[in-house]
Length: 217
Length: 217
DNA sequence: TATTTAACGTTATTTTTTTCACGATTTAAT
DNA sequence: ATTAAATCGTGAAAAAAATAACGTTAAATA
Image (cartoon, rainbow over all chains, first blue to last red; front, side, top):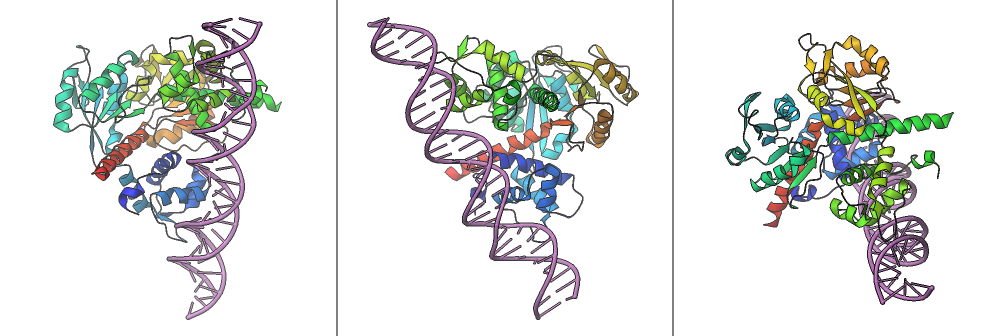
């Protein structure tokens, strides 16, 4: 199987699990880990782990398991964490600033190279080591740093406009924190990070738990 | 089908889609919407929309579609958005403060009633209308406001300890922004909001797109 | 009022994903 | 050097989910 083929297709659910395996591995101290260990920690079954890993054509050792470091390497490669990607943030509100200040991104090969806002009060303010720039500077920062990812941290009313602006300026992927469905051309990657949505999950689970409890009685 | 039964089981993927339908409906002005409209906007097919809605036993009108407001009501009910839930935040760093300041939660029946930190420098600082309190105040705030959900916004090293603390104090669900797998007893709901994980998705998609492009040539 | 039509609801089919089962491989022990 | 034991890898079976097909219903129109 060639390198091209192996990234060609496998189930979305597997991809999501691979991300989880990756995180688990970063928290693992031992040299080897078995599919059963992984499965137990995640509450799934080991065959599924083995199958997922077979999609990326990663081989374990019988009787020993998977070599943690080399599997981690492989997964980091799969997710493109080994090369640095430059990212800009649009919106210097609380969230935008929180992201710009977050130290953990470097582990993922992410570098924040610019933060923008249209509020004159915010422009020129420092955010960590960056200075908030007006929106017209997006173009030159994108060119200068070869930026592929744009992060939207503006209120939902402004989100679509900013998305358009980013696309115009050559952004390839949008990380969208605004709670709206953006309309962009097919070749633009959009990943929604609508944190309010998780609240739906939590509240739903709480509700259900209560119903279950009521049902038991 | 009784109310109890109808929340009993349906596919996880359907639940996720229902959340998306809900958001779409909040952005919809017309009185009715058809399964086809919904499907088109989301890039899925209409039968799937109808099937998802059949799980919650919601009936549309032939030739007309679904009544937007009443479906929205139904979904809000399903996700427990109609009643207010009190929430606390542990960790008054950039992220914790960003969350405490976020105005959008009220739409989801969420009220932030406390923010906590162990850093003496942060204690007593104002965050919006709240004052940062030391960790030992968690207990009384939880009791006073009947808090069910605790939000973890502390560095990953501290996350497990805070989780334990929250559980001790009677928290039922944890909204975890720290990038670690928390170990808690089975009856505690944990929803991970590891935003770095989305970066894996974005980077992977970017990588794959490049491979595809290379393959075309 | 009968007819047409658009969109729903649901059963059947197909596809996808997961689980099962078992042979193959590697290490360790006798 | 054999044998035993643990764990992998993978094809087959089962389960779950998505899609297709089609009958049903309600609105609109003649």
